[in-house]
Length: 271
Image (tube, rainbow, N blue to C red; front, side):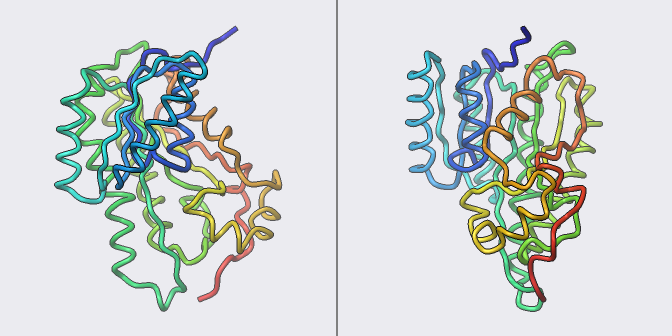
């Protein structure tokens, strides 16, 4: 039997205190990670994630240390300080999950330019900044047989021209960060750091709550599998991309959406 795991790995998950980031952290806890750095904007949220994740590990016979450090990934100075704090507390880094993101929804002619800029700063610039800082440490941990991993969390919104509730900055940011990930895979692959992108469809999380509540019929009917995503769909996919068995996978954009990217949905909003 092939065992898919991240035994002994040290992982950093941005936006890891809730939603998809937290679900990824759970899968790492249960599958052998030794340390997980969790960050989000609020220290209380990070601390709560540490408590519940370490309890999950203890309840399942896993010995894992969770390091909670608050950071606003959209703030350049904050990210620099975060990097210094993280590197003072770990000796290696094997996995970076660039998951922190935001969205803002409004009809086209009412959509503020400031909201687009704010989303791009977090969803694109923040990802680039984190990768730039942590890539040298990831390079030190990787080797040809088991490269270090960067997973960039994009969205099905990057590949279909459906307007997901007037989230114009989000749509642009996810298309941009997907292409950024492919470029980084070419540059970092020779340095024993594999970069892959995941493109989730619609998962019921705090960020998607309004869309899921108000547009459930369009979203489910438009999906070939006829359902929303489940957290296990993300967990299993990311775990595989981070395990040793996937060491020859680099630069892919993996849809985790039931085939939604193939068909799009009915138009979800109006100008």
